[in-house]
Image (cartoon, rainbow, N blue to C red):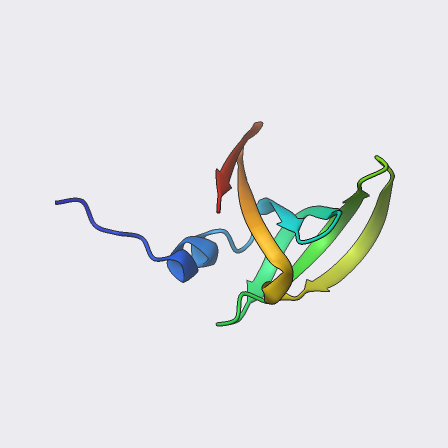
Length: 84
């Protein structure tokens, strides 16, 4: 039987990696995962914020509220793998 990977274990494996985060509403963020807590609040560095109009904003660091996260994608090379 294959071992199961729990959600927080998966996120822990992504620390230091580039991820894509889709939020409730109309915002999405791409950045390097610096850390997270048990509530899946996340700190990202080297962030690009995207909104529904297609505009994007560069930010050095951001704290995302885990209650507002809908989906997380993990970049593997040039590919994006989605986890929701």
